[in-house]
Length: 366
Image 1 (cartoon, rainbow, N blue to C red):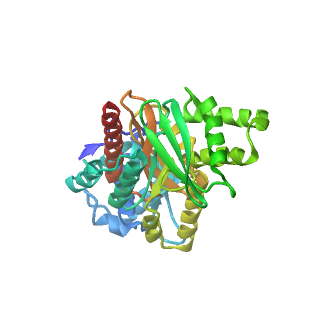
Image 2 (image 1 turned 180 degrees about the horizontal axis):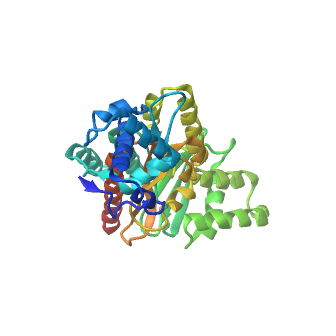
Image 3 (image 1 turned 30 degrees about the vertical axis):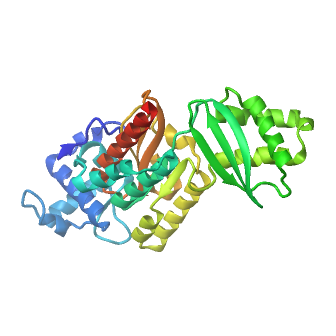
């Protein structure tokens, strides 16, 4: 097993507090955290007497645990005689004592299999990556899909059926994206042509995000040039790129059911509900990518350190991925209770991020 390595970039300071602990205190602390991460239960002194490398009494271990509690590393839940790590304790453990295991063959194979898909659409491929990631970690996976930032070459609206239309975007690099949407009532072929002409007149050379910005200012200023129906088509047609629904949202969340299965106590269920509410509100969150802005590598956020979901008491293991130009364009992560198996999940997230980066780079060469 490898120690916490250079691929992992914790947001906290170095484990200075750990250096102040003697060997016995460090072993008690490590065993409490490891046992808690495995079982979720408070750890008592009698349990540790059977596990310690040196023979010590339960009373001695209780004294050590009290000292660790005084330092803010352990806590006594309810009236239990056992201890659990605090978020500070988990941070200290992750920074200084975490054993990182290599990704095992079965997990690697499950992730590699997503590259064998015939899917041409990047969002669909990332959806499969997210499903594989949640499946092997038994947590909820988050995948932030990259924005396609090539200049737009052409936009077209196509009527499919009453109440259903297609908007097609052709980019200068040959990439094509389609979205089905519900057009405004009474839409006509002439309104569709007018809406497309209006957009194409100002879209040339702009990326999608640049076009959105320009539309907001131009559509009110030039309202007289476009009738009401075409105006609504423009707004609805572009709205489907705001990532509101499946399968094209930028933040792809898979494995919610895994978290619900893990929940036992009513307060744990409430915590997960709050987490889901946060995820729904922040489906396209630039803040998620900002978590990784200081460079490549895995970052671990525990409890309140996670500014996106701080109220839910969750942990987030996240890593950015890069395109062929070595530019960070998205991120992958696993979110769950603070009792995550960090030693296993950290290398899996790291491997997944590298896998997605390779996939994007290979597509960029095609």
